[in-house]
Length: 231
Image (cartoon, rainbow, N blue to C red; front, side):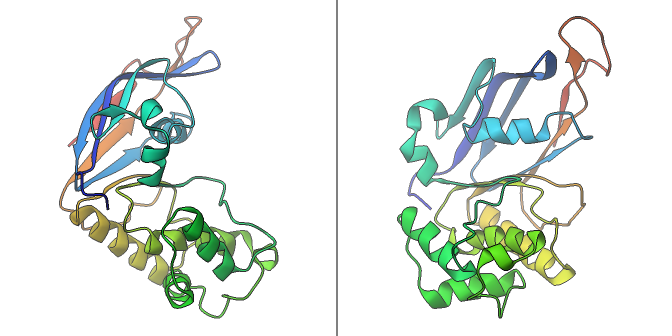
């Protein structure tokens, strides 16, 4: 991780998709060494919140800060400190599982060895698939290739993960939960969504419960308290 300590802050963030208000006045601060678990029913804005956190969407109101600076101003500096694994796996069909990891790390200016890449693949249950082209892998296996990046990304202070435990077997889930806990307890910040109540032994856990939204034309469809912080 970079020498400056990780710190994430949201100030009065408001998110609207189409005519629907997903959440508003969302405030929280996360110091270094925090796991942020984002929960809530489908359609309440969990993925939208993750996209806001990584700068792929902009809030209608409010600020998102990383190390006390708005992320929209940091640009390349912020991206170097970030690992984002969303619904799309971001793997290249024309590359092998190993090549995907090697090239991804090289682009991120943190090159790794073949042995390190192979170890990462083994940790997600892909030992023996190192030389397989990802176009020949199942969707679940492609997801594992994407998640293997985390084992090579301890330098990044901020991990943002959308349903990271999906398509993993019991052993791989346990390995990933341990990795996340280690990263948090060493001073990183991890924000994730998951439908699975996987125990993660992080020392500091911050829970955001998204409880619903409303239509901006006034037709209320869910309760008005859009988000709730749970320590």
